[in-house]
Structure formats: C-alpha cells, structure tokens
Length: 361
Image 1 (cartoon, rainbow, N blue to C red):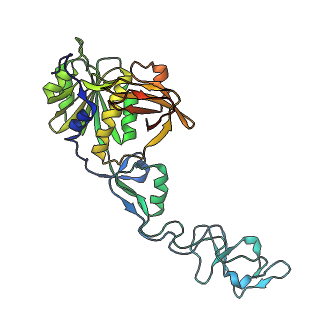
Image 2 (cartoon, one colour):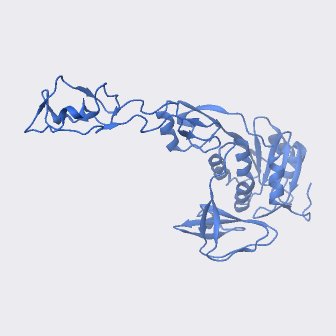
Image 3 (tube, rainbow, N blue to C red):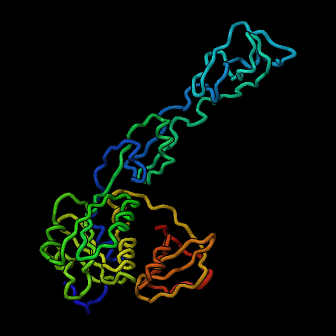
C-alpha cells in the first residue's frame, strides 16, 4: 500500500506496467449492423471485381451505342429487335454497352443517341479484386459498412474488450461519460456499484467475466478511500500515485491476469487517467492501431509543471485549439472539451502559437 508521501510513478513507467499483462482478446463475429464503432480483428479485401459485369446506373433500354449513332426525332433508327429493359443495378445483356432512356425509344425506333458506356458502371469501377476494405486494428466506421455490404460480407470479426467499471461511494456522476469513452475506444462497459468497503471492492474486482477492471473513486488518502486496499485484497497494487496531473492519486495493479486501473473520483482527474492509461489499455486488448495524430496551433500558452505529465483539455476552434485547463477544471469548462494535449514531464508547457498534437476525446 502506498503512503501519501511516497514518490510518484512516472506515467510512461505506469503505462508499461499496466500493459504488460494485457493481451488481445479473442475475436468474435458480429452482424454488420452491430460492427460500427468496434475494432476490426482481421483485414478484409474485395473478393472479386465489383461490379462483375457492365451494370446499369439507371432504368432504361440496354442498347449497343454504335447501332443508334446519330438517332434523333428527325432521323429515327430502326432497331433489328426490341431492346431489353433493365433496372438500375442490373447487368446489361451481352452485346449491349449503353442505357437509352425510356423517351429515347418509340416503338422499335431510337429517337436519341447515346455514347458507349453511357448510363453504365464498368467492370471493377466500384472495387477491384484485392482492394482493401478494412485493416486489422482499424476502428470500423459507418462508411466501411457500405463497402463490406457491397462485397457480400454479412458479418465481420471484431475484438471487444469487456471492461468492468466498479463505482465506489456515491453519487455516481461519471459512469455514463466513462462508459462512452470506453465504447469509443472499442470496449463494452459493465458498471457495478459498491460501497467504500475493501472486501466488497475486492469481490467486484476479482469476479469473472472482465478483460480489465476500472475502479472509480476512493483512490486518495482519506478515511473513506479504500480502493487501493480492495485491489490489494483481490490481487496486487503495482503502483499507487502517478506523476500525472490531474490524476496524481490514480493507481494500477492486477488481479490474476486481469489488469486493474484505479481512477480518482474527481471528474477531471478520472478523465485524465482514463485517457492517459485506460484508452491505451483498451487498445492493447482490442489490437487497435493508433490513429494518425492531429496537429493544431494553440491560441493561448500552456503552462505545466516539470516532472509531471499533464493532461490539458482543449476545444478545437477552426484551425486553432483553445486550451481550457487541466487540474481542478470547472465542469462548465470541462464539458466544452473535445480533445486533449498531453504535455510530457520534461516540458514546462508550450508558448502561444506552438503546434501540438491533439487527441480527440
């Protein structure tokens, strides 16, 4: 058990310790309708050219363009046989290469001309065989589902981390927000409320069915702060007290092979700890690939304490970002945040105009 005066564990060290027992969870297949927002377990490619043959883009008559070249109401072209009518999305019959609108045909005579390929989609124009639809570790977005459905996939393999959120004490204002953050990272939250009792906390931590456990609240050094004690009973406290601002009272540990993250009860500190430690843990469990960073200049300077990694919540405004603050940030400002900047412990901050990496919430 850590004493209040003990040295703080550097954030990088704490993250490495937390991730050492995190292994990717087993893939599961889900219908496309449930796949969005999850992390792809496998890469998927287009199995064949789409469309596989010349296809109509609109309703009309399938014709050979050369046969009706020059046709007009004043110079109708008699067709040797009545052309076939095709609906949008249907394959054109052999020997045809264009779609003539309904008003372009009078009886068996074309009264309008069309160019070769007009009104059609060529073979492989949507997708070519071997095109990548999804990469393992990629977050599945709604746009992916259109390509997967077009390629004939009805299911997709995902990795979904089961996160047990143990909420200690009352009131619980944070679990809806944390559950949403966990879901966006590719996790599924099970929320369990327990009193500030180490045995009850230990039981909730040690219960089966979770890939990782987050304990919210009770991480400080007051008389009712018993989360670290509960973790010690369920498993092992690896570090309690991190060089992270806000979030100094956060902790990490393990119960069997299950990683455990202790989150402070204060909203800014809990969010900071989840963003700095919880999201990378979920990424390790789901095999998620880190998204390309977004960089923006800051509209005001950011100050930080050397020796502490600091989460600064920001609001993106056009091409700039507006730093809102970090520790002790009022809720009215915290709820305006749509991203954060992680200031490394060796920096005192950033001057105004500095281009920094912004991580979306």
